[in-house]
Image (cartoon, rainbow, N blue to C red; front, side):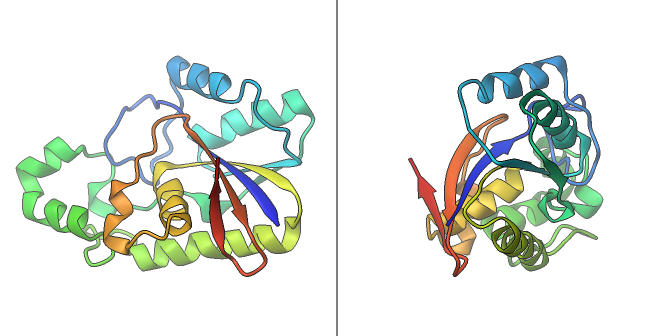
Length: 190
């Protein structure tokens, strides 16, 4: 049984909105949020991180501080929002309210223009989970990743219908614990 701790990156320099594949750096506040989030946490056998710098730079610092192996996993990158990347919900409400509403209502049924379809995003993440299960069974991993990745994994662990994916709240530097069994079943842990 693979033990997973999920940690979302902290606040980024360019702020909220749909950051997706944009490679924003952390703010000083973002660094502080992450350092506070891991105080007294662990222990872990290894760190797995999205390669985007808002995750990877902190993962590198944490790995060095604890002498842990670190793997950058492209499968754990955030959803690519296409033409919506870098735009806020408020901005999209002014220019593309109908499309944004359809995305919020059912992100599996509506893909942002030139964006990554949710089914493709889900398969990318689940393929990464299968690789982690195969390569690191019975280990304790800290995954440093993004809100969308964590929402998807938590929604699956909570057995939520697909339309409720965006109802899962994941704040900056928030941690969640999951287990992943050999059959790929995710379970949220207290």
